[in-house]
Image (tube, rainbow, N blue to C red; front, side):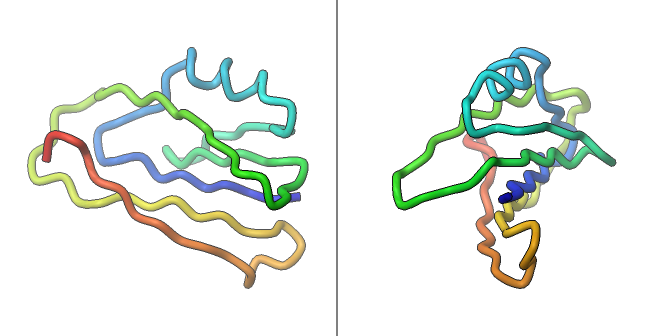
Length: 91
């Protein structure tokens, strides 16, 4: 099992529509939101490219947004991980 851990930008939350779309993906096993971090549990990954669209909405107006992170790691071997950062398009 693989976990995709998405930390939204400050002041943003995942939309319910986004959650529904992700839950309909065949390899998505479960989705959890804890302390504003979205955990997407995937059945497994292979060498094929996968694209997931996570729609966020701004719940609180924030200035000077800092980059947020996305981590992906193996549930059973969490030391095997990858990390990426992303920023708001308008910043």
